[in-house]
Length: 164
Image (cartoon, rainbow, N blue to C red; front, side, top):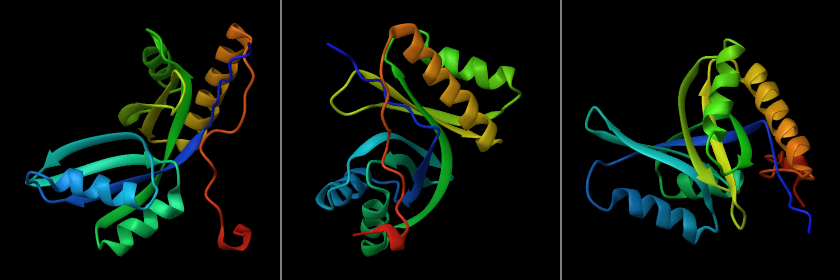
């Protein structure tokens, strides 16, 4: 049996402003679910009496459409992302490698790859291109250490001319 290890270097992240009151986070995520969007990783926190949620979704275009249709206030940014085996030290190894390359981590959070045992690590960083290269190399090293194959990670965002 060959286990598949997926990796990627970049993903689109959504940051959504929601009311800081009971049920607001659930309403946001239920709207996304109704639109067929799966949340792969998220973090939620309160800042200055406003609740903010950051997340990476499996379907960027669908998430954007749902958020726009429900008139939620949101923005999109690029983040560095890597999928690694869910085991002790995976987060530490990724964060240490970024530090060794003098890449500052502004924030991070994690999730799980659906139907696998892979951890999805998300990093908001000050140098996305370098971070993406470092994390891509880390995923390659892990594949080599474990004799695993690779395939694409999160579907890349499609440009309108690419849609069928």
